[in-house]
Length: 397
Image (cartoon, rainbow, N blue to C red):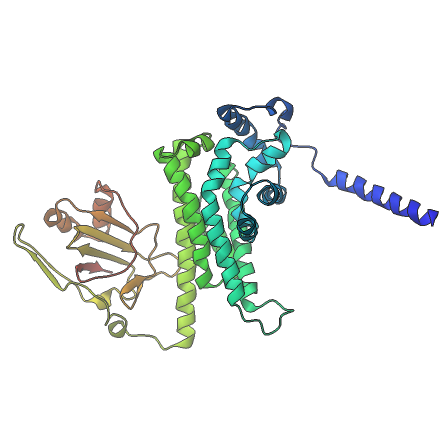
C-alpha cells in the first residue's frame, strides 16, 4: 500500500515537471514587467498598459491558451445570464480570437481594460446570434446513427478548420509576418480545396469577416473612439490594406462557393442555353431622355451569360454597374434574375453626375472604359448582381 502511494506521488511529480518543461519560458519578444501594470484604476491608463503588452501577447502566447482564458472569463466572470453564457460558449474557438488578448492580459494584471469590456459587450449580440444558429442547426439534424457524427457535422467541422487556417494567415498579416503578393490567393484557395467545405456554409465565414472588416472601416473613419484606441498601433496605410485584404478573402470565398455550385450543376444537369438562362432576366430594352437627348439600347441579355466583363446602367438611379468575372470561374452566368460569378472585390457601382457625357466614354475600348471608370470621383459600392426593369445592358464581353 505504501509502495503504491509512493509510486503515485512520484508519477504525479514527474508529470508536473514535464508540464513545466513544456511551458514556454523563452520568448523572442521581451516579456512585459507585469507588476508595474497591476493596481491601475484609471480606464485610460489601463488601455495604455494593455497596448504596451498587446504585441507580446499576440506574438508569444498561442491561440489555444488565449482562447481558453477567454472562455473561462465568459463562464465565470462575465456576469451574463447563464442561458446566454451557454449559447455563447457553443461558438467555435476562432470566434473569440480577436478579443482573446485582453483576457490573457487579465490573468497577469488582474483586470480587463474598460474599453475592451465595452467592446466585448458590443460583440455579445453577434456571439449570441451565431451560437443560437449553431444550436438550431444541431437540433434540426436527423441522426440515423446517434453514436456517429452526421455528414452535416463533418462538413461543419471542415468549414471551421478552413476558417481557422485563414484566421492564422490573418494573424500573420496583423503581426507583419507576411506580405500580400501573387501567392496569397493561391494559399487561400489551397486551404479551401484541402478542407472542401460546402458552398452553402461559406456565408458563415464571409459574414464573420464582414463584421471584422467593419471594425477597421469604423477605425479608419474615426467613428468609434474605443476602436481607434484599440487599433492605435495601426497606421492609416495598414488599416486601408487590412480592409482591402478582407475584400480579397471574401471575394475568394464567394468565388469558391460559385465554382462549387457551377461544378455541381454541371454534373447533375445538361448545359443550359443562354436563351433559356436569361429568359427570366428583367432589364430595360430602350431608354430615352428628353432633356439630354440621350438614347440607350440594351444588348441582348444572352451576351451576359458566360461573359467575362459587363457594363450595366441603372436609368432610375444614374448608377453605372461594372462587373468583372472572378479569377476562379473565369466567366459570369445568369441564374433567374441574378448575375453570378463576378468578383465582388473588383466589381463596383458608381453614381454618374452627367450620364449623357460619361456613358459615351464607357462605350469605347475595354482598357479606356476601365481607366475612365476608375477616375470617376464617386464612392464605389459592391453590386449584388440582381437585375430590374430599369437596367440597360450597355456592353458584355
